[in-house]
Image (cartoon, rainbow, N blue to C red; front, side, top):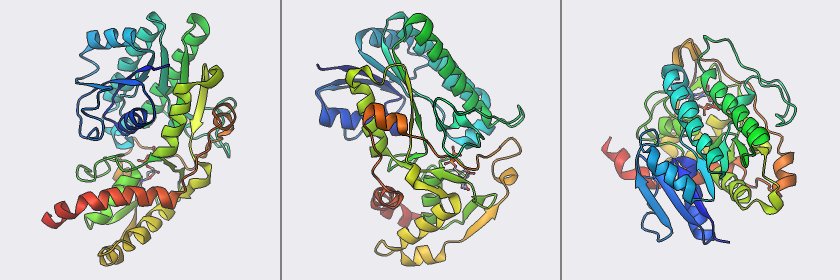
Length: 347
Ligand code: UDP
């Protein structure tokens, strides 16, 4: 049956990719709100895409009307960039927690299915070899380490959504992305120092001929996940065969792509060097260690290793991430290098 999907934050990294896939592969309608539309070129104008430019914290009537009208709600508006957790923690709380709580409550009121982005950050500094949705302990640092306000805001909302599920019958699925990457993650031309996620930051550093900075030496590890694998999982969650995604939490990450940040930097430099005309750029890149206190400030604290257990998503959704790190980085580089040429020449 044709579904009506409401996506708040539809111009984001996940929202824009999901919309494209929905319009290509299904007969569903997408209703979306965002403050911008620069990532939506492929979808704008499509007869089944209904886009409105706006701020979710202001346009509450539009949201209430569309929560009522739609079958599934994906509230994807959030600040999810670590540097902002330490520079603007109150905005993180207001947007990621308060604004989204309002939307979750509307899903409760109108009895609508909500698919909500939790985060791999909720596990914090958990020492488990693989983070498990059911058994892992969620470990955060002291209050003055403001980095954890994002994790804590998301964790509390996870708990609120779970409670609405148990006590008021809310139909929900929580998903936890593990370092998803892809072409439209962040813009390489608006990366102020430390303002974007690591993959985009490093690509910007290389292309702008700046040094790559390895925070505290770059021994910390992440499991990087291609956006297309992530979207494949989200499509399965929305389709929800036999209701298997209902009331569940899913880690969505690729444990096979677990690398140190230093290895990531070296791999990226090698890959950039394989593009015609970029060998010299790659040869000149400097990779240096920096102190996290200097890079992010004293309120930062890092996570040394973050590997998901994906057994649940494999079993319930029959999902398997397929894209290895090299391929994922190449897809991202293809996009940036194709779009970078002229602008970089002007720099
Ligand atoms: N990082 C780094 N240099 C940079 C940006 C990030 O070494 O220029 C490190 C950062 O300290 C963290 C990892 O890369 O350990 C991943 O950072 P990201 O901002 O992508 O998000 P996180 O995985 O921490 O949520």
